[in-house]
Length: 315
Image 1 (cartoon, rainbow, N blue to C red):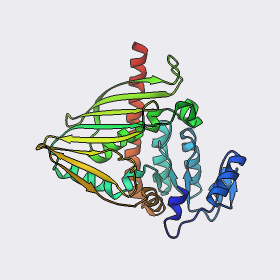
Image 2 (cartoon, rainbow, N blue to C red; image 1 turned 180 degrees about the horizontal axis):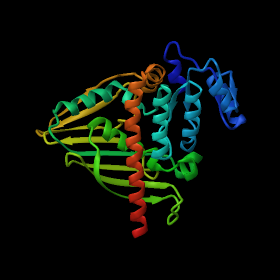
Image 3 (cartoon, rainbow, N blue to C red; image 1 turned 90 degrees about the horizontal axis):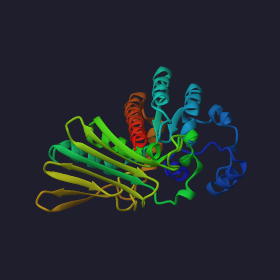
């Protein structure tokens, strides 16, 4: 994100904060950031800070996002927005009440390739949407995962972390919400309800009768796959959340005749750089629209968590 910010003219890192002074020192040297602190309040209150980027564990997002907004600062908050839909809703309400925009760092929605794909879906070229399949997983070994990903108290687990992309992508690209769902999953520590999810699979029937399949986990090779299948054609992207190769942001449209069309859109663009710029200048209304979808995503993820927990208990 530091590189992305510096790719945008007129933006600079005024100050950075971290909880571990030693790690912060190493980070500041490697990223050439002179002003650093372990005092988060110093960042929020700094007069030369216009936007506060919150990259803390999800369990700390709500507290510091609200603190920054009440200090009059725009906020760019990592996903998941918070660890629960209630706190996510509260953040959206605070933003609206104060008139201070808050953006979430879901990067793919800022890439022109994503807008081209959504235009195809919404144009009717695929026909009536019948299936939506999204899979997100990390290839990292479980023992190398960051602490916040395996600690429930910090908002960890694959559902909030990777399931966010599955659900948000379905809402953003297709515009259809689930009406019924089923889910199952496995926890890091089997049989312990307070342990985070290692993997979760969910199936949903969407508003138009289409079926959505969402697969997320820390136990499979890295994937960021999406297929939207209609009655006439299907759209496939094997790296929708972020291009594997920035110079080859591709996707394909497959027709019923067996022929496929490949599209290449937005070569060399860094979606995080566009995200940073939009977070700094997006009007309140636009940020509120994105927040509403984020809150819907949190609500759906909460329901999946409950369904997977119920299925686990019933085993």
